[in-house]
Image (cartoon, rainbow, N blue to C red; front, side, top):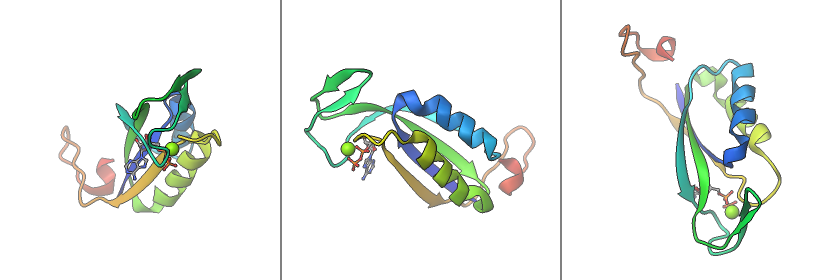
Length: 112
Ligand SMILES: Nc1ncnc2c1ncn2[C@@H]1O[C@H](COP(=O)(O)OP(=O)(O)O)[C@@H](O)[C@H]1O
Ligand SMILES: [Mg+2]
């Protein structure tokens, strides 16, 4: 299994969620975060407003997937979250040791 952490522009959430659903991703956790990338201290646009502050609002997506689906999920996020403007975000791919569905006690990919 793999664990995907993606930081995206907030207005791209619905597009990303639908695209991931289309390739069979089952679950997703979304958290409101703030961050910056390489353009630290530079301006960035968010909902029509120009941010000159150090941190810009983003959404962090966390997605556990079967290893067989991981590369496709990363490509799907990349394509659906892209605007081509600065601040489009990043995708990180990590190994995932175990997953447990609390309700049933299932473990491994079957728990996802
Ligand atoms: N190296 C990093 N580690 C952790 N989070 C990052 C990193 N780079 C970017 N991010 C997150 O992704 C968001 C968008 O980054 P982005 O501006 O698209 O990156 P860059 O300017 O490096 O192309 C940032 O606000 C931050 O939350
Ligand atoms: Mg940036």
